[in-house]
Length: 326
View (cartoon, rainbow, N blue to C red):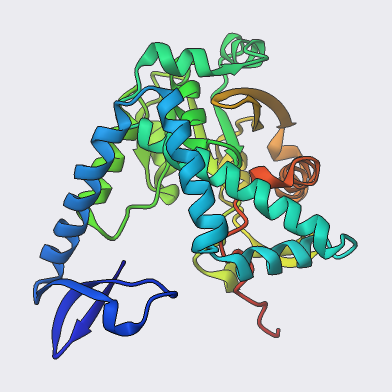
């Protein structure tokens, strides 16, 4: 399903690459783009909320169905995934990369349905399904009166991981967040992510937010494996065998406020159950060279991905930007 235009009017087109164009269906047409966004949002809500109240065992039946469809029917972003894997793991055979791709589709299907569940998940369910294995790390920083800069990635179920941090850490969670272009989805995601006490903050306002909440110790969480919006201003390095622009916000903020940097390593223990290990990256960021902290967190993530590559987000065009000369 995608937004399109016919005879100057906006609409939603339902299409399938295996159907003739004569069978593609235009559902409706509107000239108001905001109304189109609202209709898209309404379709999602009507489908997602009934699914979100289902027990996990039923969700995983739906996940198996989704897995079959995106793997064998729609072949979701297959070329992007295989190209990313080929670039990241050039020494692997095509067969080995296809095995990872199928495992990735399984991970993606489970995380997609689990994230729908996040709309209505209870506090007790979060605490049962995602545990912090070394809570003492947070307790130690709290004892020392230190706020924390935490880095994570699109690995396993990062939304559930955020809920677990909000509920387990005594620090106030500040989550770096880029608003969505669709204000209806943006409001929904905001409400979902805030329900266990997180405060959503645009990345450039993290330092200010830490000052505004100075009466509380804070843990500022960044999903830091996204491509920077302005690659010409990014730090470039080699990541997964490729020239990669990297977001350096966490390191800059850590130096500014002199807060320790940690990596939140999420692992799937079994289907629907996860742990988070808090890995110390740099306790004294002001004493390090420029980009040293960023490099260290990247190497931690790189090793994690190499160990269990299927759990990372391979269908994203992470390397579409190229370094400009000079």
